[in-house]
Image (cartoon, rainbow, N blue to C red; front, side, top):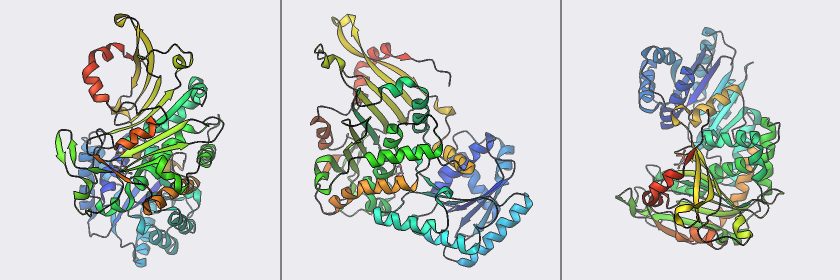
Length: 510
Ligand code: BG6
């Protein structure tokens, strides 16, 4: 990789501390960064280089995936960092920044390859990019790239406006829109698994699959993010981006030659094939929920409207479940159920693929059979589980589920931000959100936003610590299905022993 300058706006912010510095450090100790690189942190606060470096070191101790305990490598790493005061609205500050970058590039004798990482609120995106342009920061001979994080707009129109502005300074190839779910190793693995396993390709279609369930449940509530969250809700915060990206990654029909362009083209096809939801139909296909007081891991927690800085009358959604259909050759007729919520019973992000029941179809099903399931555990655990049926000799030959289970060794798995930052530095945008996907996602979600706005969809309350409102279960029940693994923990406690015996741990070498 060529030498580069990493220009970080929002260098004293939370994301930088928790994710960006630890990711850079792990890449550094894995020798994935070039010999010479420089990181310039920007913020409004006055800070010496030494104090800035001390803050970074602190964040490594607190948040790095691997322990930061080698003083030499920490010192070598920190040497690359310098700090510059910048007020995003002050044009002169950008000229000062340009001088600093040029000095660093001269010191390192490096080409002017510059990555502008905007770890700041979206309200600053346009000002910053316009000033990058005006000051000439982005017009040197090397490459320039822009990394931004969601939210990319608030609805379809504002997303389009934002994009029009960014495009005046950066081309689509130069814009890296982070969706951190695309950096999750299991989501990335979906590409590999499908490309390299004909067996998966053969069964992932409407001839074999009864339905697909994608869940991202969280235990946390709104935390200290009331100002942001109360304006976006689950639909904008998680569904429009992360959930639809996971859907695309699962359902694209990968070409054998999976170049970035091909993957993006195929993802776009999925979004174009998603059956549009009309505002009037949102009520029957979408469940809008909000948490009430309840118990989380044995402790009482308050309801959403009693959270600090949330109005008692807030109608904001903290949960969404939706039924979607993809109208293409492979998936026509397979319902996709997607849900995400805060203050749920457990933290789990997973895809469950339910196969059609051959026993049911052949008329030999007895009540003890459960459907075959293929489960991709995305987080916090990473793994793949295949649930099959076998007869239990101890229970008069009744069927019982047997799970074939592969769990990833998490210690060695890079974090999402490591994957994504490295890809951006290499200029590989396969796992970033292309504008077409972002636009089509907003387009799909827009009727939901409007239906919520006009109160066409009732707000269903659910107690914190549960699996969401009862209507979310009904959404599947009316089609003859159920959410799988919701009662996982009870099941494990009751049947721990028998399940243990049935688990065949596959011996994989990675
Ligand atoms: C963020 C959302 O994008 O994703 C948060 O803004 C949410 O509200 C988070 O908590 C969930 O990410 P993860 O990786 O913990 O599933």
